[in-house]
Image (cartoon, rainbow, N blue to C red):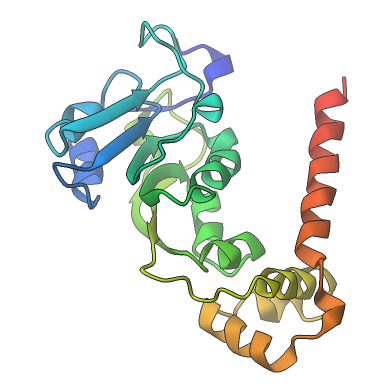
Length: 230
C-alpha cells in the first residue's frame, strides 16, 4: 500500500508506459529529468531513449535517495521533463518548471480536468502560451493506475516556442486585468493567444498597469494564510 502522504498513482500497464515515452521528443543526448519515477514504469523505457536520465522520487520505498522535487534545484542547462506527478501538486510543479528558461519540453501525466484547463483559454494557460505550445497528447483511463484514482488522467506536453509570442511585459497585465475585471469573462476564455495579442495592441491602456503583480501578491497572501491555518 502506497503511503497517503506521497499521494501518487502508479502506472500498471507496460504498453501505456511505452506509448507515453514514444510520444516524447527525447533524443539520446538530451538531459531528461523524470519526476515521480516510483517503481520504474516509465524509467525502463526512458533509459532506452536517452543516455542522460535523472530520476526524482520522494518515496523511500522506491529509492535510497529520496528527493522532494519542489526542493530540487533545476539544471542550468537545457533539459526535458517526463513525469507521472501527484495530482495535488500539478499547479506547483508546472509553475516551477515553466519558470525555468532552460526547460525545452515537459510531458506530464495529470488529472484530465486539470489538463483540459491547460489547453483551454484560462488565464494561466494564456500566460503560459506566450512561451510554450501546450497540447493534450493522450487520454488515460483511471484503470491504468494503482492505486486506482477516482478520476481519469491525460498526458499534457509543454514545448518551448522558438520565439515568444510577445515580449511586451505589459501583456500579462492586460490579460490579467481583463480576466479579473471583465464583464465578458465567458468571452475572453474563448480567445486564443493570437486573438489576445490583437486585442492588446488595440485596447491597452495605463489603467492595466500592475494587474499581474497585484494578482501574484494576492495569491501569496492566500498561500501564507493556508499554511498558518490549523
